[in-house]
Image (cartoon, rainbow, N blue to C red; front, side, top):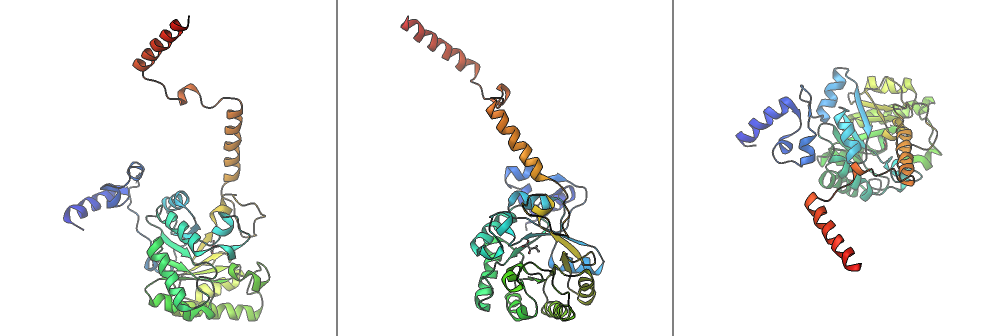
Length: 327
Ligand code: KIV
């Protein structure tokens, strides 16, 4: 960075959430919406997540799949924006996560990335993009970084994925693990069932978590497991754990943004908490628009463009002349 640029950057970061790119020639839409905060926000990194765990500071994570939602999540100071493969159901209307393609995941990770400035951007590797062989897995993981700007990729599976994850990390790509109820294994699990309820299941989950800890994943998502098991894993590993349906003792929590906003169409899971009703808000707005259009209440005169006075006068003269010729 030049001296000039770094001076401007330092000054800007004191007053605004924003970067030198925004201050010096970013898109107009970016510049006008900079938010004064007083305290400059730190960029969240893999290292800062570990720091948070060490200092017992809880880590927040939400899914987002496009520019506007990622931007709102980022501006709300959520630590991690996860472009989850729940994209499949939440955005694309698929039955489950198995159908979503790597091209679809990359497309949405790119869009979300444009809205993220401080959060850690994580891209979920979809079913079929890493299971076949390590070379293909590394190549696909690199696509998330190179083509979509992901800072971490997420891979489902524990002990049996440890070697593969090591290969991706060796290629300088941080990886997040995901164990317990892993939706890409829905056909093997025979449904979306809480995992780790038997002694054998608890032992397997511990082995999975320790294997991921040893290969050095960025964080471990613990999904759909008993609170007691999540607490044991969290105490055992140095890696931050992020729970979803895993109780309050994890190092952080993740939820799907559509769930917290009531934008899903099925019954909510036990662990789900609704923080807003966007479905009602959106439906009310759509119905009000439809009624206004039906009743010719929209647009009003103030919402219409008008001819300039001179053009209107000239037009009236022309029309008057035409009417006179017809008489
Ligand atoms: O795809 C997703 O949304 C996820 C979270 C539920 C952790 O993997």
